[in-house]
Image (cartoon, rainbow, N blue to C red; front, side, top):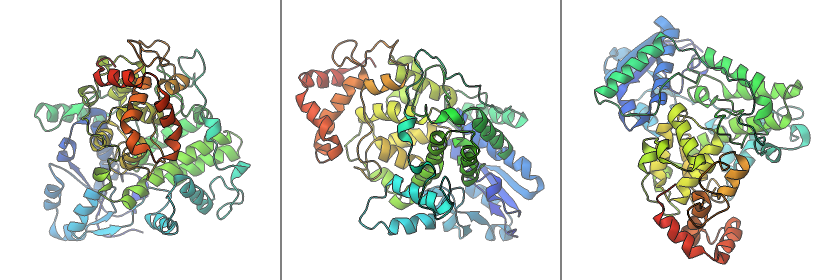
Length: 499
């Protein structure tokens, strides 16, 4: 419904879903990019997306390039400023900002389910954990996505809710790549060139601290580009997405992943439309159910779930959760994305991918980066903010449940029932990293001891008191007690310098 109010849209609200036809406003505040060191590719994407959207809207938009949001608001005519409306923003700080200025706030958009939907579901779970699997099934039932009989049905297509068992294949043996076509890539334009010039100048003048490479731009920043990226994923990679969802290859950084997290988090795609379109591919016989269900689970399940948990768990969740007493600062090689200083193949390739693209896929994030950070007791707040700043799809709402909860188990089990920690055997099974590595995944003591394998046991030794009551950790802790070289492993990892 068109309104006479001017609608201020934020960087996560740049697509048609957030546009009801009235006057619009976009504020590009340089201070946002200077709060902490940021990956240059991320800064480029956000600036490019806002400037492209302003160009698309033409005379319908007020586009302000200023130092702070307050400076932008001060430039508005008083009547316009008093009549501003916003679609509820995607962070606590932004919501507090607009409410402190008495703006007209509309319900949030950009997710398959509403905040009210989740609140009602959470209230109905009195005394029960808010499990993602339970939430995901409710979403499927309400929407009818991949359900026999449509909305309201209790019968999932294919008779199963979850095809994770079919989606955990190791990469093909001896293959350097999956052999899929190169993904669709956007073509940079004059707007991108001006963004790059501005970032160069801002960095030279000390306004921002940028880390990593920039260019060429790899992710969509307009709704038309996002549609092309979605088309490409469906046509070229959806069929292989499921089987190799958790696999890693050093020579294939995209694998069969969709590369849609950036346009989704910029608000360029409607996630409901995305999952419905993917579901059609199965119904038409063009994609296997395991791949389609795995993708629907990521977007309509996990993405919605972590969005709602961000609000449900509260603003203090990020800073008050440290169940395992992790306080070590991130090492310089993480903060500077200095892959050359790392010897273990899996960690070096993952950090180097971050340096080059500002993106690695979810298993590299969870079972390489997160696993390493968990083993070494990196401060979860610092790690959470690093994930936000260094990943092109990092946002304040997406990372707490993923990093604080699932990856680091810092919340003591609210999001995940056990720590996601493993030795080198898992990485060896799911990747080609270990074959040419200077470390051996089967060795835990000595010069070739795998930092992940030895680190796994050293972690259990350190975290055992906090994990004693966790039934899912009973077997690993029993193994720790039987470990003949436990003291040697722990001391080796305490003194480790090569990793």
